[in-house]
Structures are given as C-alpha cells and as structure tokens.
Length: 304
Image 1 (cartoon, rainbow, N blue to C red):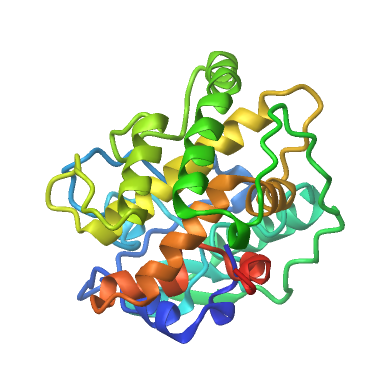
Image 2: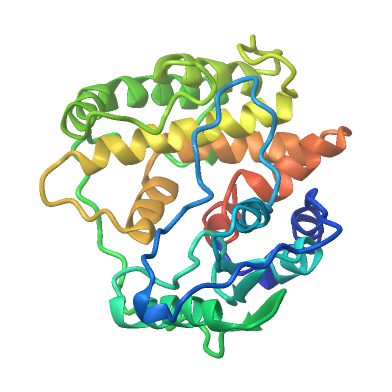
C-alpha cells in the first residue's frame, strides 16, 4: 500500500468517494484521568463472508460513545474522518494499512499511540488532530529470496502464450507442497476469497488470457472484481508457499521483488493487465491500470 497522495488520481478519487456513514450529532463521553483508565484496542479489520454487505467506512466510535464509553481512533484518510465526525481522531499521513507507521519501529509506534490516547483527555468534541510527524523510512533492504522451487521461465517475448500458460500451470503445482506445509504450520491460509483452489485459480486466469470467459463461483460479482480477487488469491498462495522454507525473508518488499521478478505467475498477471487496459468496460480498464500490478513493479514489464 502507499500514502493516499501517491495514488493515481482515478484511484485516489475512488477511495475518497467511498460511502461514509453520517451522524446528525456526535456522542461524547468523558472519563477519569487517563492513568486511571483501562484501555481496549479495537481493529476495524474483520471477517467478511461471501454475500455479506460491503463494509462501510468508520462510524463505530459513535455507537460505543452512545453507551458512555470514551473512544479515540487513528485516521488514515482525513476526508473520511471529516465527514464521519467521530468523537476523537488522530490523522496520520502514513501508508494506507499502516496506522502506526512502518513495522519494527516500536518507539515510533508507541509515540503514535500516546498521541491518540492523549485525545481522551479532550473536554469536548468532536476532535480531529494531525500527528506532527511522517513515518520514518524503513531501513530494511529487500533480501534475495532463494525459492524452494526452480521455475526459471523464458522471457515472454520469446515464449508463446500457450507455453507461458503451460509453465504457469506447472509452477502452481510445484508450489503446492510448500503451501500445504505453510498451512500446517500456521493452521490457516489467506487464500480462497474466490472459492477456488490454487489450481482452479490458475485455470480461471488462464482461461481469461486465452480469450474465453471463465466460469465464476461468486454471485453478484463482476468479472473485473473476480479477476482482481483471483490475482490476490494467487499472490497469497505463492507468498505463503515460499515463506514456508526455513530462513526465507518474509518482509513485503523481498516477497514482492521475488514474485514480480522471478515467477511465471507475474507474467500471466501482467498479460491480464494489458488485456484489461484495452477493454471498453470501465471497470476492466480500471483493473488493468491500477489494481493488478503495483506501480513499483511496472518497470519489469515495460518491454513486454
């Protein structure tokens, strides 16, 4: 993820336009001095079952304060917070998905938490303050991943589409053992949003590359959304598989560099990206332009 101001204008506008709940008034509860309070931390992340209504942005604090419990929160999109008007909020200028800043910097993260908790002492609200610092740059350098599977692929310009898809199918199968080991160790997986197995996901994406309309499993879901979710499932499958090998780096940059630089799966997703960009459907065009290949990795495909 990136800071909101680093997104393409089209995607930034889409995020800013997400529906926000509106409240006529802002409930505001008070309490004893901060040192005498018991604190509970609540994340707005949660499980979303197929068929559930989409999550709306914010609003939880209003309901909690109506029950007499003071709240404070961290905001990543100031414009949303201005609309929702929660009782207390601290806006931070960090990457989306990182409300406390960069990983592995507890001193900075504690500072963010202290600023957010300090808002509990505000006598009236709503309160919206800006955190005074940007997140420090991470000092971690990406580490070369020694993949447990050797699937060196030919460059796409010298490889037919069918050969690429054959290599892709073999690659997915070779990753299976390591993926199952990862699932056994962690007792969970982040894949499966589409309802497909990894092999079915590969077949779904390959069918689209060949110009056919793939069979879907999700009801009331556009083909653009299902392709996006299938690509995310595929990346999660690869990341979990490669991280199962002892000693492998698990930081996001190393994983991204490995996936986009060394796998056939990345070539397949990039092929889908180019197909979508040429599609007349606006959702497909948006998918190709913004949602399949990270901007930081596009340079790898400029000649393909």
